[in-house]
Image 1 (tube, one colour):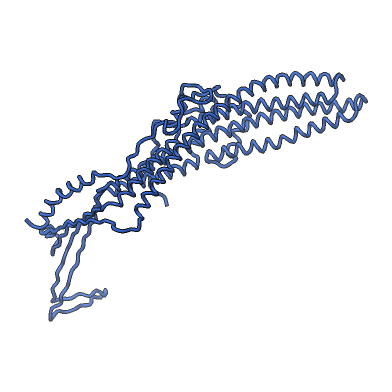
Image 2 (cartoon, one colour):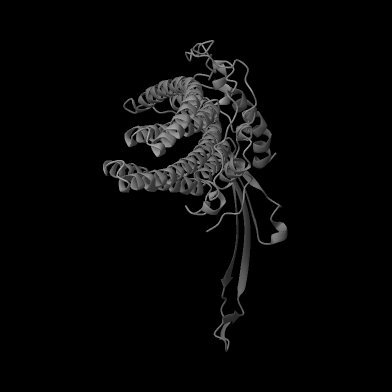
Length: 493
């Protein structure tokens, strides 16, 4: 039995032994935290709808086709999402790198050479093209093939813990992508509501200007007739100027909202101005959204799930650091053959298998410090996880209260607007008839403008609070699926 045969016979025995040894994995095993450990109560501290609903496509609840178009366009073209997708692909390749360490590294080599020996009496010739050749000598050719392999046996699970950490980080990157998606969707919807609210406020201001122009004209006629002093005209001019001054401010705010939507959808700031040029109503969604129970945030909110995966990764990193405290076993092997001709390469094959055990004896406490550092990182990750859960519940309760507040303000402003409109109509009629002074008319007109704008703002606040509630509940993505990087594409550049 030659050497290569003996090596091939012993190799399975050695590999079986090392496989049994590699079953040991040091470091703590990650265990998901319970709702109680994270401080999640059984019920909300505010009045909330108890039944959770499907809010994967929550914008459809507003029954506004333009809003739906813009949100879905942002989901496919937003540049923040493109960056998050790139980070997700990076995390996937980092996982692939970690997994590769579980397998041996194999390399091959091949060579060929020829040695020429000139015997006495040989003639060296120089050909016309400059090539030098000889006659009367002898030559010998040699061909070789080699195969080398090396493998680090994962005796104490350091590599497996590294793969575990990379997998958790990849999943966290997927949830980070989903969190970015939710943020983009809600930001588009919020700015859309603002744009429609500013359009309504502009309409209010221009309608008020038309009425105040009429009041100014009436005041001028009454001054000319000697019925009132010029104070009425000056008051009318001042009121009109104050209303006119609000128009450019509202236009500036409207432009900022539309520009923001353009950028969020991956376009130039002014790209959507033609689409939104025609005034439209403020989106009016349902009066509430089902919040379910507080524990839902552990499943529905992607930022919470990302924090949980970061904790799992930090826990696995403790095992990576602890594995360095134990011996490392490396195997290497080679198979070589050489012959004077290609056909004879496989006539004689030699091989060898080598094993080496390495153990750090002194490192001035570096490895133990690394273990402690990873434990501290895991403790910090747990604190971040718990903070994300509490913040999520805070977001939900604040959004619920904001929605309820906006609804109540809307009801009261509707009453105020109705009363102010009736008072203003009566005051205008009395001023034309000389039954009241301009100060009374101006007071009623100011109250009408304030009530109308307050009603518009309350409606916008209701829509904004509902959007915030949907986002706080984790709406806008499929929580039953962990986001994964798209299939590999050809690299550019």
